[in-house]
Length: 307
Image 1 (cartoon, one colour):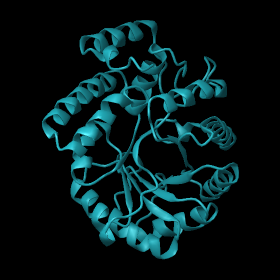
Image 2 (cartoon, helix red, strand yellow):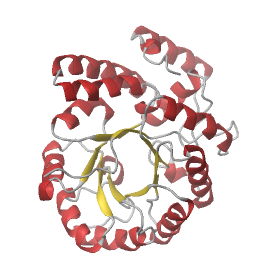
Image 3 (cartoon, one colour):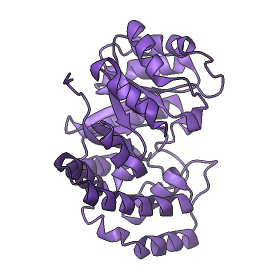
Image 4 (cartoon, one colour):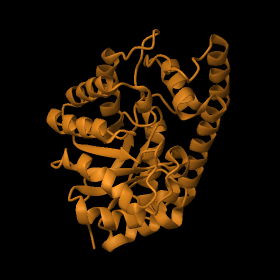
């Protein structure tokens, strides 16, 4: 069964720009949005893990969402992550996202007091999704962060019975058997957004047609080519390019991971995203020098001439 897909292709998870004092710097988002549009990225997933959502206030998250919706201006889709540990806060953020004209919402499972059963997770999400009932809702499954390892395929089935706008899942986990179950559930009813950049090829091979990731901010051309090669059936070249991605991500991990290292890369490339918010340590001048050397060794700057 062929299903109509709301989200396709690459969806970048933007960094939240901040000034040197650690305050949100909304002025950067205009340039950032232009870059997303220029680089043929189909959407942005804002205020997620990469966007440091759990370090932001409710007001900051609202203002960031407003800025992205305004600057996107329908050139690409804006998915607003409204998840957190407080159901009332998430209801407020979901209603706000719908009110400002966002394209979809997403929700991570609460990771402090955790749901013990799938029903508990549905109970938590149902009123939040209802607050943005006109928007597609995607469950953001990232158990390495939340510690919630409930079966996603079961959540989709139980959730759809009570949450009419449940569209699918952002699947940031390495349980590829479960991911296939989600992709094939009910004849492919649900959209499964691949969430690990370093194994995008694997997700595409088992049927994913859209992906959300942080490295799509700065080397999207590489991943767009991987997606095109898979469509052409040229897996040999796609594997070569995926290995290039792994080389880049290995450097990012060495320098603090996708948020800290990735934000530093954006700064190196000339888009001033500033430092991360505490408790993530700020990059030093020596660390920037080391990062640049490591990126040069793998030919990284030849991959980003679209900046």
